[in-house]
Image 1 (spheres, rainbow, N blue to C red):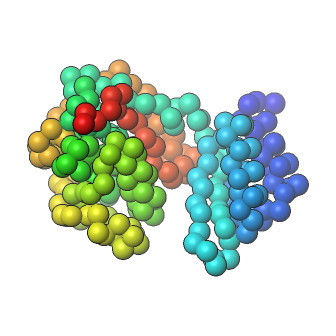
Image 2 (tube, one colour):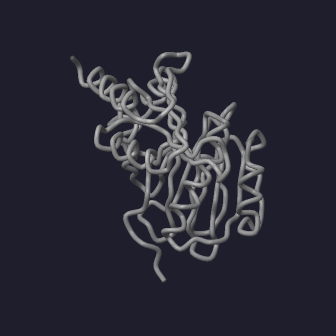
Length: 244
């Protein structure tokens, strides 16, 4: 039995013995699981993390029929999906299905992405601490969760209020703007390819990055599509803290 098959069997056995409602999604590559019990959610999260499974977890608002829902990706390659960029020359190239975070004092203060055709592009930037993040999102319904992750990561760098940039096709963000609207101080329309420099807070024409992981990370795009893996993965986080 392969490692993937073993993981699938252990997940199914755990769910059968739990209070989760679960089923296979139509592609048979993913398991959907839901519970009304917060303690059960914590148990499943711990179990999946211990197994090294790839999954997405959404907590619902109080009073909703479920406390949490999970999507478990049975055949996903966790190591490939969590591969981080290794940029050089100060520029982090963000590929489809990725987001990256940096700041002006980091050795890589520039964030770049391109080919935002049907994909959505998002930028958050706090000019006070000069910390920013961009995302290249290929499943529109993942946009709110991705933006929340970006806000959380930027918060660890001291960011509080943001310039909010987005391409014209960004959808499903009304809940986000309602929740964080007082922290979005200015909106910015993004082009389909750009580089953003956190040192001056300006957009520039797209600049190609030098990175030995690019080829491997490009192969991740087809793997995500083949396995219907929808979350957007963090590809870069600064190694240095924002200077006070």
